Image (cartoon, rainbow, N blue to C red; front, side):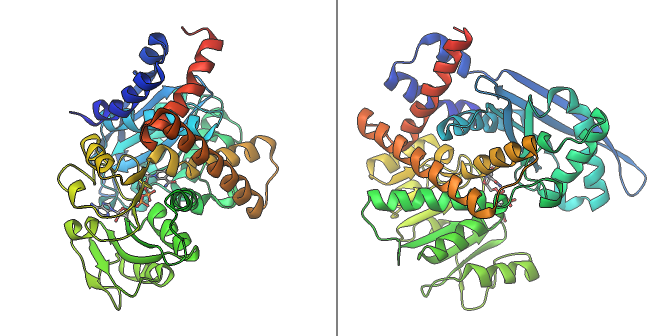
Length: 411
Ligand code: NAD
C-alpha cells in the first residue's frame, strides 16, 4: 500500500465515526491540483542536470494552500500528495484559515554546492510561480530546506511578480519578515502537546523520561524545550546513529557537539544505541521527530512508552496504530502535535500582510494557547466518539472543512 493510500485509513475511520456526508468525503479524498516540473540546473562543473519537483494543493476550501517544500532523494508525487493532505487536516485541527499544500524536489542536498542549491531553488520557483502566491499557496521549510532557501524563494518570486513578496513564503529570516519564535515553533508545539498528554495520563512533567528520534529542526527544539520543561532525555538518534545515557542527555550541549561533528554520534558520556533498542526503551514519552514510517507493525509490539508524541509527519503506520491502541499507548498524532510550525507560519504571514511585527512573547503566548485549545478539543472528541486521538483529530478537522464546503456550495 502506498503512503497516500495508508494516510486515508484514519481519515476513513473518522468519516465513518462522524457519519460525514458522502459529498464531503469524496472531495477530501482527492487533492485539488498537482503539478510536476522538471528543472534544468547548470552545475558547477559546467554540465546541466535536470531535477524533478512537485507541488500539490490538496485543498483550498478553508483558505490558500499552506505547506513546506522538501528536498530529499526519496521525494515522490505520492509522498507530496500525502504531506499536502496532512497539511489540510493539520491547519483545520488548529483552526487556521488555510488549506493544505506541499512541495518537494528529488535531490540529495549533500551532493550540491550552495550555488547549485540556489539555482535549483530559483528554477523550482520559476516553474511553479503560476500556481503559488500569497493568496493561493504559501510555501515553507521542510526537510533539508531552511530560512536561507526560503530567502532565495522569496527573492525569485519577487523578481517574477515585480513587487516585494514577503507573504508568499514563511520560515524566512527575521531580516526578510520572518517571525520571532518560528525556528522553535514546531518543537514548542510538540512539547506543549506532550505536556497536555502527560496531564491526561497523570504523569508529572518534572522527571518524566523521554527519547527523541531526529535532531534537526523539530528534534533539537523538542529536546531543548522538553529539557526546559523538566523531562529527562535518555536517548537521541539521527540518520548517522544513536546515543543513550541513563543520567540524561543535555540537549544544549548535544547541539554544540552536533555543530562541530555533524551528528549526535559519540557525544561525551553516552553509549551507542541501535534503532530497534531505541524504540523499545522503557520511557514515558517517545518523540519521533525524523521521518515517516518509523513505528511499524515490526517494532510497535516492543514499545513500552506511555505516550508517543509525533513531531515528524506520519512516523507511525496504520498497522502499528492498531497494536499501540490495543496496548493503550496514547499516540498524540502528527496533525495535532506538530501543528506548531504552521501555526507560527500563519502568524508570520499575518505579520507580513500588515507589515507589523509581534514580540517573541506574543508569538509564544498565542501559539501555546491555540495548541492547548486544539488538544482539549481533540481529546474531548476522542472521549465522545470513543476513538483514538488520531481519529479524533481527523474528526475535528473534517467538522471544520465540511462546514466550509457546505457554505461554499461544494456539495
Ligand atoms: P531536518 O532535516 O531539520 O531534520 C531531520 C532529522 O532527522 C535529522 O537530524 C536527521 O539526521 C534525522 N534522521 C533522518 N533519517 C533518520 C533515521 N533514519 N533515523 C533517525 N534519524 C533520522 O527536518 P525537520 O524539519 O526537523 O523535520 C523532521 C520531521 O518533522 C519531518 O517529518 C517533517 O515533515 C516534520 N515537520 C517539520 C516541521 C518544521 O517546522 N520543520 C513542521 C511539521 C512537521
